[in-house]
Image (cartoon, rainbow, N blue to C red):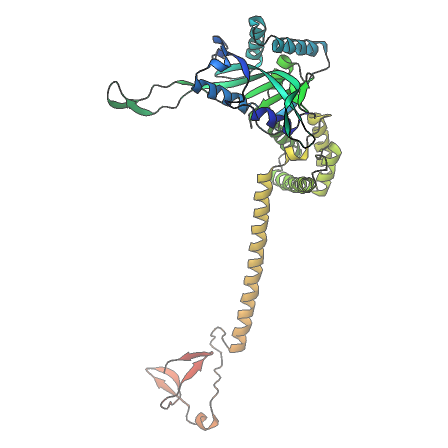
Length: 416
C-alpha cells in the first residue's frame, strides 16, 4: 500500500472555505428507474454559501474512514480493458470536466453497475493542488513541490425527508410539512489519480465505501477497471461464515470455537498495537488452521474450514484487524468472567453451609427428633431441684429460677 494516513489527512484538511481549490463540479440526478432526471455543471467558487458548504461536506466525507477498512487503495487489473479504463479516467481528469461526452460516459457506467433501489446523485469534482514542499523539520514551505491534479466522484442517496409537523406561515397554522428530496452523504466514491506519498499515482484509485455498505465489486471492475477488494466489514462477515458453516448444524460447538478463535486473534492484534513496527498480521489458511487447532476444533471440521477459507479468500487473505469482532470478544469475556464468579459464589455458599452445619453440630443445634436427649449443664447444688411434672397436660422439665438468673439455649440468651 502506497497511500498513507498522512496523504489522506493532507487532502482532507484542504477542504475548507479558505483553502478549497475545486474548479468545477458536475452532477447527474438519477431516479429509482435508472433514468436521468437532471444534469448540471457549476463553477465551485460561484456556488451560494449554503450550497458551497453542503457540497464541500460531501467531498470531505469521500476522504474519510480508515485505510484498509472502508478506504481502499485499488490497483488496475492487468488487462486491455483495464488499460482503457485508466486512459479514460486520465482523459476525464485532463478535460477538467469540460468534456460532456466523457462525463456522460461516467454517468452511464455508474448507472449501469450501481445496484441501488432508490434515487441518487452522482457528483464529480475537479481540483488542482500545488503540493508545498516540506523542510527537513517536516514543516511546509511556500514553494510548490508538485502539481497534483485529480477528480473526486461521490455517489449519494437521495431520499424523502421524514413526515413532520411544521408552521405554515401563509396559513398561520401548524400543519404537515412538505416532504422534500434530500441529498445524503455518499455511499461510495473515488479519487483518481490516488494521492500517495504526497504525489500523483496514476496506477491507483482511492476508493471510499460507507461503513457497513457493500463495496460494489461490479462497479469497481466495470467502471474503474480495478481489482475489487473487500471492506473490513465484508472480511469480517466472510470469515465468520467460513468458520461457523464448517460445523454444520452444531451451533453450540461452532459458537464456542469461533469465540476462542476470536479471542486468540484479539491477542495477536493487541501485540501488534503495542509494537507499531510490526506489520499487520495476515490470516492465511495456515494461520487459520493453527487457530482452529488451538481452539480444539475436530480434524474433519478443521479441514473443511481450511478448504472453504482458501476458496473464499484465495491469494488475498485478510488482516487480523479486519476479521476481529471486538464486541463479540468483550461480551464473551464478560460472560466467561461472570460464569467464573457465579461458580466461585456457589462453591463459597457450599463451604459456608458446611461450616454452619458443623458449628450447629458443635453447638447442639440439630434438628429435633423424638429420641433426642436433652442435656443440661447446671451447678451440682442446683441439679437436685430440677424435676419433671405435668403442665397443662404436657410433660415438662421444671427448673427453679432465682432473681436475676438468666439462661442460654443453643448459645442464644433467652428472656426469663
